[in-house]
Image (cartoon, rainbow, N blue to C red; front, side, top):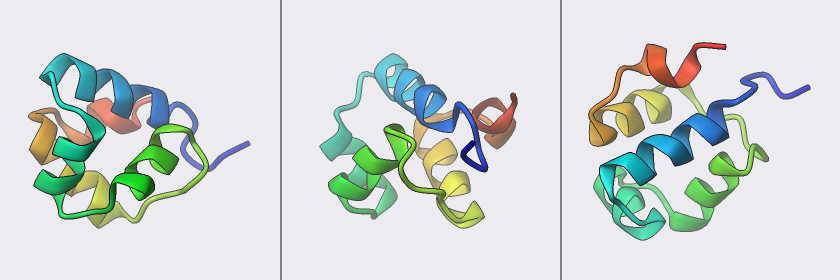
Length: 68
């Protein structure tokens, strides 16, 4: 079981609601697109600072991304 179950699904849903491509969000958050794709697929466990950065770029709370 991944340490943050559902994070990838919630991240992708928030990105879709924001109307952003992976490339656009990655650029805004100053991370690689491949890294973002791996986060969305649940293959990587991001640092807290990355979760905070992505939430800010998406206009959502970190709680929304982390809530089970």
